[in-house]
Image (tube, rainbow, N blue to C red; front, side):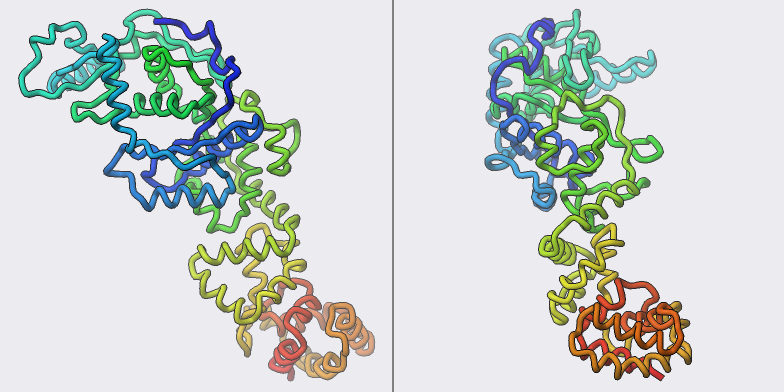
Length: 484
């Protein structure tokens, strides 16, 4: 078998074309989202194309709703693809045609291996504690001896000696002894293509120059290389990126928390923050932790991706998301909140309440809210005072603040605030300070009960900002509700 080391993959000057090829058997896993991001970044960095292929040949598990969910997640992540998505199942005729071409050239053969024979091979391999390597007796058999009425599978005829080499942009030179790579089935007995065959045909027809995917596909790459070589096609460059692990070093799973990209959306992370964080899982640009998508596009090179598995850290993602919340302008942040509420459980009802109160109030509250929030739910929770109905329900800490002395102070403050002509934080603070000084009280002794009366909580955005957002009529009404 030829060694593809003589012409390193990717050494040609053909245009860069990457692809992301999810199977619609579920939603978009966060590891898949990172794979899509790396493909997108490399395509945009090189001025190439980023294509999308839906590998829907598993007809039992592939669902339209999963396709829709994957597309929606990619759009939310703002990873735009070039052209229309290609659906693999629709290309079955093309796959069969290539299989027939290999058959006619003697590079593939009809295999009538029975299920019983295959089971016997598997049992012997298990008994001898070795991997199953199928050696079909039909590889060199006389076609005239084929059993009547049996539809054969089509197997690729591969070398039994030598080695297949994958020159990987991330993993380096990886060698596979051909004795461990059996004559894989390329077309099943019903004519359906196998994964490792359909992928090669599709990548070739889509002019894919770089295949960037998880390291768990490395063995598949050896088999796909054999198909490429059998067809005489130019090999794409391969880059097998490390898997995403949990904080304990084990492969990311449900026990580590959220897996689907849609879950991160519903937890209130911003697309830009998630892109930034995912880009840092396995790739880095010096010591830069925070960078814009534009910077990532300018800097990214798949050859700089490391080999070691990347560990997902929710605390770091939260800190990064908080940074992006603080950096976003109010209009963008309001839009993100509205989008979040559309998809969050109970979100539409909360959105209706904000709409009734006026979205402008939430927008006005954002400067005071964004400093402490790390996620959109924390922003929404902090803004809850806007949509509370009177009389406000008090949490335990707020109730303790509203003692008899506090109620007297609130009764005193109501007319003082009513007299304030400019309903803005600075004049309102001046009025409260003047009252506290006159009574010989520390500012917090009066401000804390005031906060409780206005929000029902002991913690909130700056209390004078809260008053300004609520407006004079509503703020005074809430103060009077709690006054003694």
